[in-house]
Length: 112
Length: 113
Image (cartoon, rainbow over all chains, first blue to last red; front, side, top):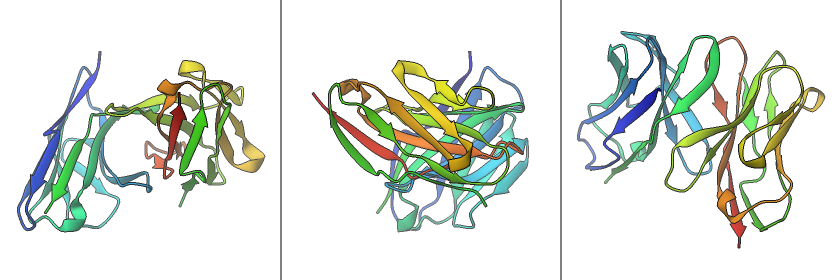
């Protein structure tokens, strides 16, 4: 069966520090991968999605970037965190032909 | 661009009360519709989905949703809620042309025992 992992689960970082959040998927090949940010009262905002290794599309211009170095690995990064980057970050996967997305446990990021 | 609206941000019900959460979307073409649920401390998980066919969709845990194309709505219902239904509920839509989901703002449901 397929599983999706995210780490760390919680992260507290100072403003201006770098960020790296990791997401890995097991049990499927060539998944579509997604990064979302969940803000209270505003639902889930799609940040990035990837249909293959090295293929990243950005939905919202911002301080963050994403990379997909391996088929089942998706990384969310920042060179310098802002206070506004605080939030709950969710990774998700889907496969072509099946529109359902499956979500990871999320990473709660607090930027101080 | 498509958008999804969930008009109830917070709902408080007593056990055994009936539930209906509203979801409206704006997109004129063919859509796939989803309800996701996030229980406290758990992953976001799929509750039910509609792709085609019978517009009344049955999901897990006694939930159902009805797709009304003329109203651009996909409301979630449950005849009798339980305390364990306390969670945040998200409606989502994709436009059948790709894998991108657009989510509503979510509705926090609290069921009082």
